[in-house]
Length: 334
Ligand code: QUE
Image (cartoon, rainbow, N blue to C red; front, side, top):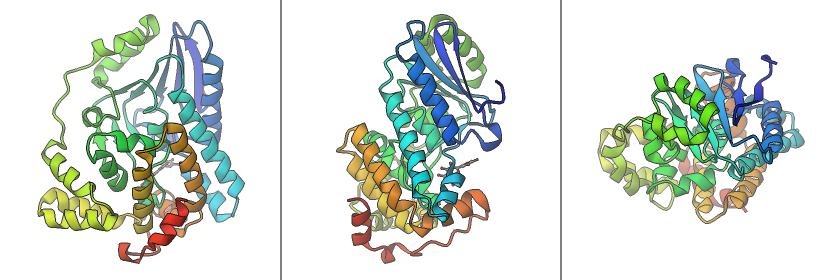
């Protein structure tokens, strides 16, 4: 039981989901996705389940993403069916969380990236501690912000979503509340009490455990973010950052310069398009885009450099933004 990578159990008035693959920072593999879907299906219409609480057994991570190593292996072996199965089930889980009839509460007390945002952000309540770190870092691995992020990011204030989705910028717990990815800031020292109160009394107890929200660390840069990331193309975003003449803008320009140029372009287009889609249509569009992106050399190379070999020296194809073919990007998003 405690060896299982997802532990699902009813406890008092709630259904508890515990992510328990700590050596992989709870990165979601297909077995975990299936276990989460099965538990939600069991509890959907269960009269004793008044809320679902998802939590982590790792003290470092809530969930670091998806099992991107396995996807890369499938991509290198030309196994399209394996890739399709993974993303189709992951996105189905994201949609099932969004449609879950009872409150779905995520307790986030560590790294929460990519797929980890997918199993939290679609729920009604996302509790973040000062140890939470939220990010959508997929442009660093030649992917794109998926798990419904093409729906969520364009709905964040101003151009913050496009900024987060292109740069992979990390937000600590309080900042994630300011950005709208989390709903409550609860200090780690109150989390044990919150868990017990959730079991005893249900999801109404969250607000009483929240602490006053510290200021938004991006507040000094919000205007510059909106000025730059509201541009009509990735090259124009870079041009506007270069014209800002601030330490922050220079750092963000350098960050964008390390990402896959092609991935920046297809991510920009996908996030823009998601502004006008429902969550269901955005997830369907994301699934179609995964078929093209996982065949692009930057995906296997990015996962190699950032996750497998960890040399952090990806060799992108093409190497620069001006060499990315806009027609090829448009074709991938058709
Ligand atoms: C960017 C990403 C991911 C990443 C690193 C990046 C990502 C992801 C993982 C990851 C982490 C730990 C694991 C694992 C994968 O790393 O999406 O299998 O054990 O899932 O720079 O987007």
